Length: 593
Image (tube, rainbow, N blue to C red):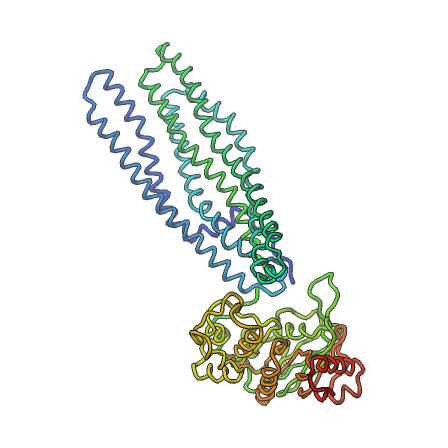
């Protein structure tokens, strides 16, 4: 796999999220600027009001103007704030859609290297932090910066000496504020990582909920999750502490500036250098300076918080994905009609660099149609065969051929449209039974659905369910038995109408009656498609047209059951062991070789 590209600068990543919404942000910024302009005009109106009062002149018009500036400015700023908040929610939605669309197409090895809980926190928690930094913080930086400059200009026009006093205080306190910013970024990054860890641990517990309860491990697991929650709290507290320091620095700078200006300004009024009205207007500008400086501080802190979230989002965006199909592929259209042939040519494979090889030059051919069973000790690499056919993983060497064509040359969507796959643990998704059955073939008709239900012996199960096919099966199919979940997985694969059917231990949780029915079903469908079975039960293996015996990542023998019992010691031993296991359960010894 090629190395991930280097991370782009945070500002560039932020601009990518901001760019589609730049017009809405510009409108919100314009309204905020108008509100700022009305605020800057208010001290001038107040100065005129004080001067008219001193000259005992009419002041009603000035008072009305001042009131209008306050009311209109507040209304305009409220509308601008709504526009920005609405846009911020749109930014979050777009980021979540982008991440969801990418993470669902992750390559299987990429998913296996990451914790599901952490990936979920990137979609939920991290994108929430993105909302402010791409809208409000940008507007705050622009409006705050312009407002700050405009206010400074007005203060300088009134009295340059008092302006120098003000700026001196702000610069001293601003230097300490700048030192705080990196601390906010580090604390926020650690907090988000801790939230991801907490989500991972919760997902681990909920994914094995019955095991946790059966083991009496609720208190221990609660303590593990609590530890992650405490870590998130600690880092969040650290971030909040430094954000409080940054926020309070604004008030401190203005308060100290006020005291300094009050002292220096009083002396200048006493000396006649400036009037009382000028001092009042200057002090009003000083207090008005709180808002633009506050916006700049807010923008800086939000940037630090958002930068941490953006870094995690960008990391997820750089994960390797499979090619996305331009549209849905009709089932059964993965290639030529009829059953598919499969061949492995000197295949080597390991899951990643540094790990031992799982396959060491595996070669075999599977003609079509018919049933081929894969047997061998645990860890022989049987299930990996299916993963390589489906291209969940790519071979390290050699070739995997379907219909004589390297699977790497197949369009991935069409390759998988040819295959029905029943996993070892037969996963059932939360939702109704109908939704699970139609999961791989949403276009299937009601008649096709009924036929498959009968084939998989699920029709009797449906009849006894309270809402039939529309019964909710619970999280991971918790309302179904293990055998029922396996039959659902088999029916789901058959409804796909595949040319190649992969069954990974599909009978492990079936009782004797349903196992016999499945054997009959496999024999029936094998007339029309190629069926590959990973099996440990002898009853499943003996009926296969051909058997591939694997050991330590190699193919050691191929043949029929009778040929292998006579010619391969490992297979004979496995068959004998299975026979003994059947006899121990009270089964008939005639089931053996």
